[in-house]
Figure (spheres, rainbow, N blue to C red):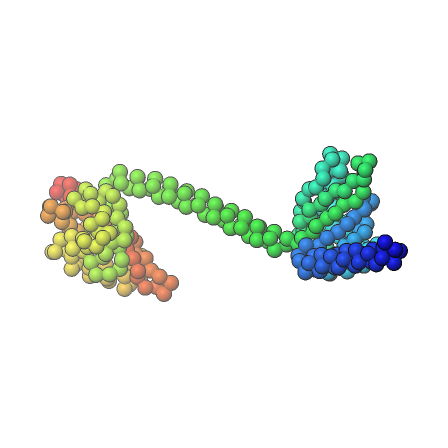
Length: 291
């Protein structure tokens, strides 16, 4: 093979290598991954940096000419940690590692990056250079923080709900072990029930009888007392009253007549309209019979 043929072969190989390098650089520069090749010197001077470092508002020339050292753009609160991690990995013989830290862009903005660093050594085992693949993860960090905050908020809410349920359970235990029956009625005809304590069973009814609407409280008020109770409650509401007190008779599930003392708190909306009645009913039949 002659000299010319060898030269042409070398040029062909070189041309193919340059073409592959160009393709590779095009792929890198169109990706979110920035590639660095640093020397293991102070402040990590760059021997190579991909063109897409522009996403941090720098040019490749800024680093290649030495106008900017990579360590200079690492956040002042992170640079010592990054240096110690790098030194430790070199001393322990690691070949690669990943860490996260903040950098400052050319416009002074703070960005989070994730760096995967490959440590290259010479034949004597000395560190020759660092090959870094750097990716902007600012949005990921924000998303992670938002998720953590949401989980913390959810946890706090669940703890509050748990505490509220425990207090509610304790309160219901106290109520259900007392002679006082608690109702929450809608401010409608015959007072439909939204809540009633379990101890309504003392009158022969189940809580479900009222909550389901099968039994309306107004329907168990003695027919001879119902109209007077309705009128007095209506008058109290119209006069802006906050409470209503009245003694009257009710019918148990077995049609037995009982005397009760009702103390009701009148609830209104922001417009002042009556929306609900919160009632406490006490069986006073024995006291009435004694008097």
